[in-house]
Length: 58
Image (tube, rainbow, N blue to C red; front, top):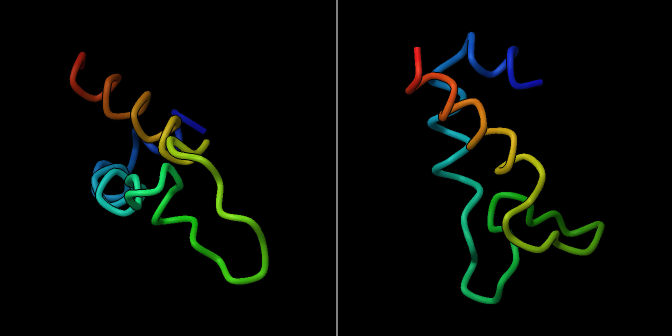
């Protein structure tokens, strides 16, 4: 997953912008009406952070 994201720096930036704390400790980017909202940081945010870190170390 991280390698997939590393190849798409724009995607990584967008995921980091979207998947932030909504002020209640949950992920704003994961706010789907069908299910419970994941606690922040969600797994998408975690992977995006690892990909961003890898991009910085290139």
